[in-house]
Amino acid sequence: MGNRIVITGAGGQVGRYLSAEAGRRSLDVLALTSAQWDITDADAARRFVAPGDVVVNCAAFTAVDAAESDPERAHAVNAAGPGIVARACAAVGARMIHISTDYVFSGSFDGAPRPYDVDDATGPLSVYGKTKLAGEHAVHAALPDAHVVRTAWVYTGVGSDFVAVMRKLAAGDGPINVVVDQIGSPTYVADLGSALLEIVGRPTVPPLLHVANDGAASRFEQARAVFEDVGADPDRVRPVSSEDAPRPAARPPYSALSSRAAAVAGLTPLRPWRDALAEAIRN
Image (cartoon, rainbow, N blue to C red):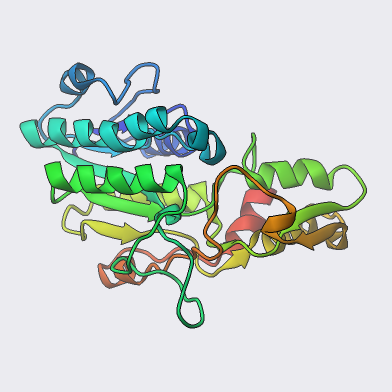
């Protein structure tokens, strides 16, 4: 590979895994947390980015509901910050991989829903989705050859992500309610991380890609699968509608991603979401 990999947001879910995996592979990596490199600071970008680097921007304001009440901060980190990083990369001749989200889509279809392709029309419903879409545009405006990688429903299975929370609930007893009308592509961080490192080594892949585990599931189905895999009774998971479990930010009712463009580009397809989840629970 040869090039130094510079990771922003290395304290977050994806950045932490990516830093560890790059280290395991003995790659030259500089991993910086958001405290070490605030991507909204233009001077910081010039300090850290060198010619020939591949900058993987994992820094993001990912608190979807909190973004509704703090749109300025969400815009600074998700939209302005990635543009600053892209301009710094363009100035010195560095590459950039920027992580985006399925929430740039609206989830409404004329006919039956189908996984979103890279060229499908966007239409974000939330502040988070709108700021992430603005970030994609800012990156490509400054660095047209940057790789914007949309992923979805990323989890590690530890901490506070959806799978981790379901594991904790499975260890208790009694019923839990989970929304049945939000459908997406649950993606295991280990599989996403491997795909990102593959893109690091493949500068000719297209500038917009979808990378997610294969298949689609509702949050209800995903929760039942977690219960099954930890040996709890999946019938404790009860389906409810989003209207019955209101949140500050609107979620797309359907946002599964098609990785067809990535496969056409020769990237290794990610395995089915159910297989990935089983491994995440085992680990």
